[in-house]
Amino acid sequence: MDEVDLDELVSSLTPREENRTIKTYQNTVAVACPACEEPFDDLVVCKENPTSLNLSQQLDFCVGTDDGQALIFTHKK
Image 1 (cartoon, helix red, strand yellow):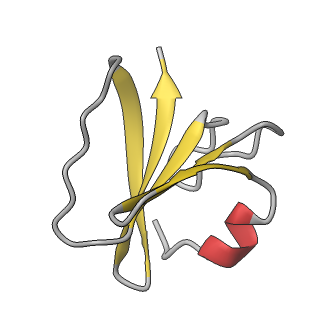
Image 2 (cartoon, rainbow, N blue to C red):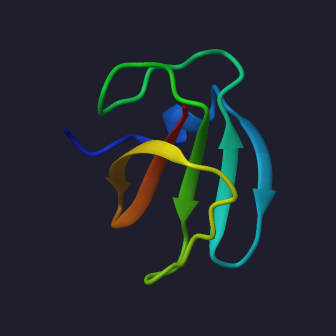
């Protein structure tokens, strides 16, 4: 997968939550995941390295990068 253009991608997404380590966006318009080409549910942008995620549910996910930041595309089961 090529590097993701984060600015272009988030222009179509709805911002949800931000703290010092992550920023999340909800995919309300069924944008295709850059990795698997299926619509994803949420995008998690990791702003710090390393970053720990505590998931409250089981998810499938794809991973990409933008300027060295990890991008996690979640797919709810």
